[in-house]
Image (cartoon, rainbow, N blue to C red; front, side, top):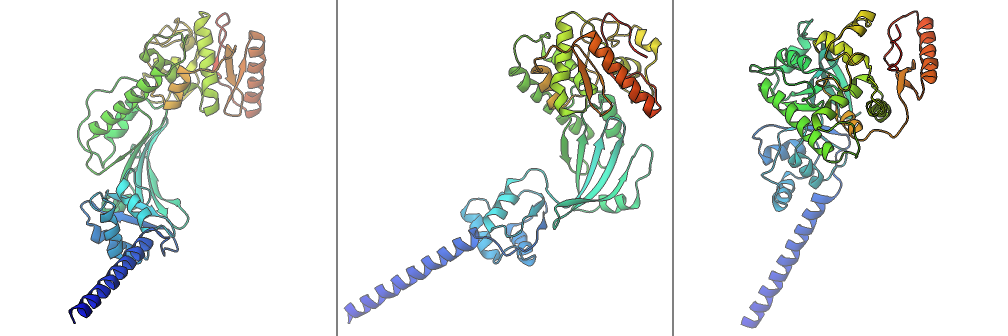
Length: 399
């Protein structure tokens, strides 16, 4: 009898083990196979949210088949306690393990309602937009310039909701004064600002913040990123550059940034300036002259006058030799990279070509032909202004 009982117990144990193994295998398949979600959704993970709350939300929206399996899988892979606050786009048919990866990896939010304060060269504006998960496209809700316009009702309603996220985006070429003035008008930030940072020391980039973040905190992070970028790129600079310090390279990068908005031109513009420095020619670049007039406190708003091109200031590169004493704006990473790895060319001049780019010249004769073409474009457009141009050192600037 005892032998029969032992045999039955062993049989039952084997059945239980096989069943348990089958459950585990089923759970693993559920956790790793494509999920049931037919259309993308935006999942909000609140600060302090529990894994159960998130799993219940996912199950309610049809993204997972079992909240229990989701939680067990997250715990088994040691990610149950790594939830990151934010709004995340969950793709159609994402598996449970892929969803866990998205909500625990963190980083910038990828969907939901966003208030983006964009600090540009000409204007700083608030853009309110919302991502449509089905199309993966942002829909604009409101846009306004806080310097000239009161916040619209749509902004006020959204800005106070708990799940909105905030972002400050700094464009390449804005000056430090413009950044400070814009941050003062960001109502979702708080705190006073100190002195205007040195020109060129703020990184054009996108910064995700929360309501109540300190203005100085944002400014400090901009400075930290720019210093890191400059140090990284300076360490990998090419040999033989006509400037000896990272600070001088930053000055060059700012000139490049202000001279061209065409990414593919940056290294070529850099080569013109480098070639002129090597030959002892004055840089004669209009944006530097403008900075000497405005001190970076907004755009000039008109063409340069002949008297201004001849006036002696530390930034008038028609008068001074070499680089200006400081950057004239905050250059982006690509302009810094161009300053430290310019194109190999024998160009000495460039002038606007009417397409948004520039025509480059090796000789004074080539340059004069390019200027004549630009003048014809101006005539056809009915305008007349000093072109954005690098002039020959031995000739007066065109007017």
